[in-house]
Amino acid sequence: MLIGQLTDIHIGFDRKADPELNLLRLRQALGRIAAAPQRPDLMLLTGDLTEFGDAESFATLRATLAPLGVPCWPIPGNHDQRDTLIAAFPAAGMHDGFVQYAIEAEGLCILMLDTFEPGRHGGAFCGARARWLSEQLAARPTTPTLIAMHHPPFASGIAWMDPDLDEAWLDRFAGAIAGHAQIVGITTGHVHRAATTRWRGHTVTICPSTAAAVALDFAPMDPARPDDRVIITDEPPGFALHHWDGTQLTSHLLITSEANPLARWNEGTRAMIAGMFTERS
Ligand SMILES: [Fe+2]
Ligand SMILES: [Fe+2]
Image (cartoon, rainbow, N blue to C red; front, side):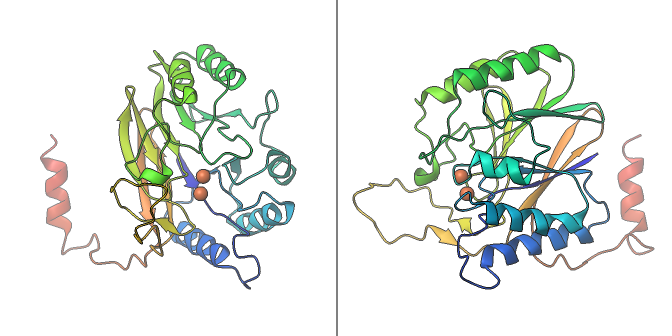
């Protein structure tokens, strides 16, 4: 099973442009997905799907995704709104007023989490959401489980995007997943660039954004003293393809450069590829 992931699409950011840049960037990613040899079986949309959470932007998103012909499962980011998200994607589930739900396919459970708190840039995960997560994990103790959420629970090193590590929601989330060996991965968005780490014993991946990228700069920041550093760049749109083979989840993080072929599997490369197979036995 192939699980696609799009994140941080930010439709509506420059809505006066026609067409707007973030829509063009989304189409670029979708074009790459559509041209790949294998089509994803489903798509995860991990938040900041719109810039302002308005119904028009969600409708644009839905219409742009429709030709792909793949079920799309959204969760909110800090730029979205729950009611307009659910109105555009009514198949997404809600629990206790949060957009949290489980997807089950091919022996894998995907738990979609809601880390949105209106008015806040960073993440949140309250007791009600943590209880739901604990219950879901307890109900399927041996089912391999992928968790998807907008906000990464760790510090990427990019100061203006990172949580304070003493924020209470981080420990609350960590407590809910502690001891659950069935978790095969945690995938997120929000940081607008690809990264991966090991956090509290789990592999956490940040999927790159389709919207403009956050510049990779690890220098500390004094919020009162702008230093003219680059903070946003026009790196190409990115997305993720998570390959699930029944026992292992492998996350491929892609950018949408042209991907022109440099080598093919033909008579010229036959011996090289064959050698890779024979050394295994
Ligand atoms: Fe974002
Ligand atoms: Fe975000």
